[in-house]
Structures are given as structure tokens and as C-alpha cells.
Length: 292
Image (cartoon, rainbow, N blue to C red):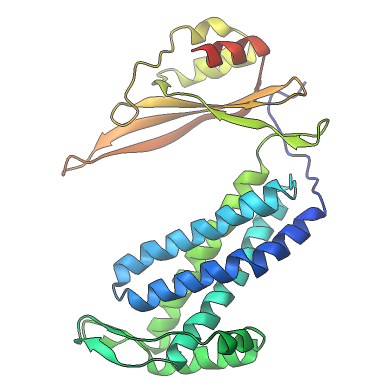
């Protein structure tokens, strides 16, 4: 018996309908919000984090609606779906943003920090969406002259292309990666359903990672008796156990260590170390972990 879960590579044709649904509902809204945020927040460092959030939001919609509902168990297909979704969402964003450029009004502020008031015209945006040639023509014109600057200098030309390329890479990378990870999660072919995912309370930090993996493979549950939940996951180094349960009778487990670290300002963050992912466990170990 295989000790680790492997995706079957199958999928339901329903994922196509789910993708189309996301493309005509969620992505236009997300693209609209993103365009307005980028337009009205003239701080490039903040915009970078907004771009990351945009990518995560697109990836989340794809993971929840397309991968989960479409029962996609093919990681490569999941990645392709993520890429396609990112391109669609970015296109909606560009259509809205270009319309904001077209309808730009009064500017306020100074050379270092300022905003230009603008609002879209929905019918105009709607027409732009169906005219990609016009959208890309406007993008080229905007790149030539620029619409914003850094330290008083207008950003245009090659530098602006580079910034836009970085933006696209960030969004596409995040949006592609999240559905890829989602499609790798355990799915029961016998019940035609995803495993129930249960994130257990934080356990004590695992010092001997190889020993834990060996214990699982050998069905030796005694090594888990020493685990306790007397840890503060906001401060202490700890381990995270994610249990995947199914009516089919099989259970899988993923385990990672979270190592606490403190920076110069006293802020606490955690480094993640995946110990094992989607390993088959017996019912006794499943019950033991749930009881803890």
C-alpha cells in the first residue's frame, strides 16, 4: 500500500463552468477593486502589498470555486487554471484602470505625493472589455507618457514596462501556485469527495523529525504520547498537524514545524519547515491526535 497520497490526475468537467462563473462574477469585481486601489493609493510600496493581496484573492477564488467545486485532482491542470484566472483578472483590472485614465479629472497634492480624481463609466468599461485591441493600444500610449512618478520624475517607457511585468509575475505566480497546492490535497475517489481537513491545536515543537516520520511509517503511536498542547502558538516554536479524514476509512496527515524568531524590534515571526505531507496513518493515531 502506498504510504503517501498521490493525486489521481482526474477532474470533473464542471470545473470549466466554475471557471466561467468566476470569470464573469468574481474577477470583474476583484479587478475593479484592485484598479481603484492602485489609482487612489499613490505609494508604490503599499501598492506592492496590494498586488500580492490581489494575487492571493484571485488564487483563493480559483482554489475554492474551480478546484474544489470542479474536483480537480491534477496539479498541472490546477496550475494552468491559476495562470488562466490571473490573466483574466488582470485583463479586467487593465480595462478598468484604462477607463480611469480616460476619465481622469483634477489632480491634488504635489510632485512627491498626489492623486488624480477619476471614476469609471460602466458602459465605457464594458465596451473596452470586448475590445482588447483598444485596451492594449491605450496601454502603449500610457506607457509612452506615464501617469505617475517617483520623487517628482514621471515613470514611463522601459522602467514602466519592467514595473508592470513585475506586477504581472507576482499576480500570476501567486494565482497559479494556490490552485496547484489545492489540487494536491487528498481526494477520495471511492466517495467522490474531498477529505475533511482538520487543523489540530498547536502541539509542542518536534525536535527529531525523522523519528516522527519513521514512527508513522511503522504504525508506532507511542512516539506521539510525548506531544502536548501546552504551547502558545503566538510566541513559542510549535508544530502544526493537519489531519485529512474521509468516510472511505483512510486518513492522511501533514506535519510542519513553526520556528519562532524575534527581530530587532521585538516582533515575532515564524519559519515553516514541512516535516511530512499527506502521509497515510492508522485510525488509532487519528483518534489519538483528535483526543489530544
